[in-house]
Length: 132
Image 1 (cartoon, rainbow, N blue to C red):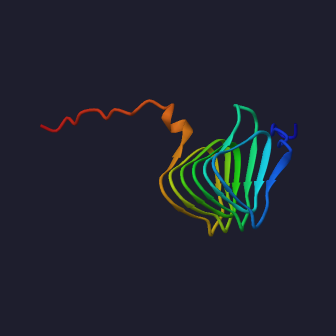
Image 2: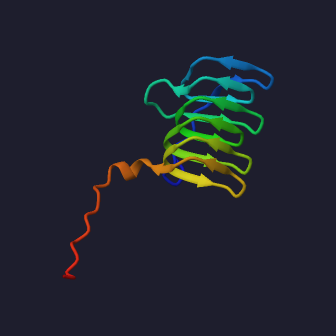
């Protein structure tokens, strides 16, 4: 490990450019999407994983993985348990839950961004005002 970072898992699967997959896609370790997926893209299990959605790719459905890199289009909610990278040509329509977020200039999100850590924090209660 270098500087406390985990080595990324290998990308062993590819949905190629010009290919359309309909239905739920379950993957382990790493997946790169250059084509179109009409369905959910979900990591199988709780393991360390990486999902790359390239500039030409489209996903219409839920996305769930540990590390997600997006430079294409996603229409649906995203849950990222480690790090979400929204690169300059990323276009996301849907709510996003993340642990760590890196958003480059040019990336567009139409939805709510919410840290997974915010769900763990207790709600703050404001003290009543002393004004009578």
